[in-house]
Amino acid sequence: MGKSWLYYFLELHACGVAETAKDVIEAIDDENYSTTFRVIEGHLLEKYKDFDATVQVTPKKDGGSLVHWTVKYEKASKEAPDAKGIIQLVTDMTKDLDAHLIEQA
Image (cartoon, rainbow, N blue to C red; front, side, top):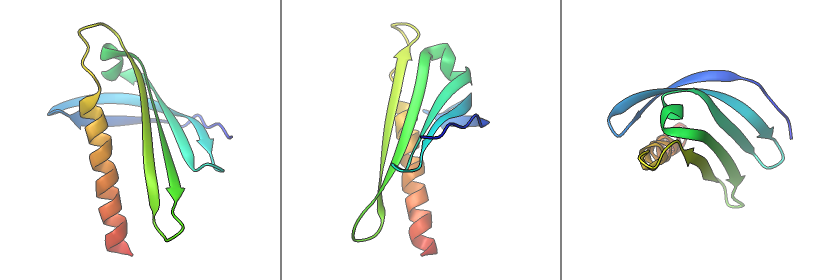
């Protein structure tokens, strides 16, 4: 498993609210086709103590791939919302990417 310290900024529009996040790619696993991200700065850390996401792509035998996201977070307080809006955003982005790749094939 390789490590990368690539930092990047995101502007998320979940639940109609624009939020920023500075992420770092913590791990790239070429063998398992996965990448793990950790939020290190931004609005998300006002709501969550920790926020990590892993995306894994598994090739299918008959072509195409399955994409599996794992999101781990700890709320900063009891009042902090669940991450449903962000999870929906990631789901929508994955579907949009899928549609784009199918269109390009």
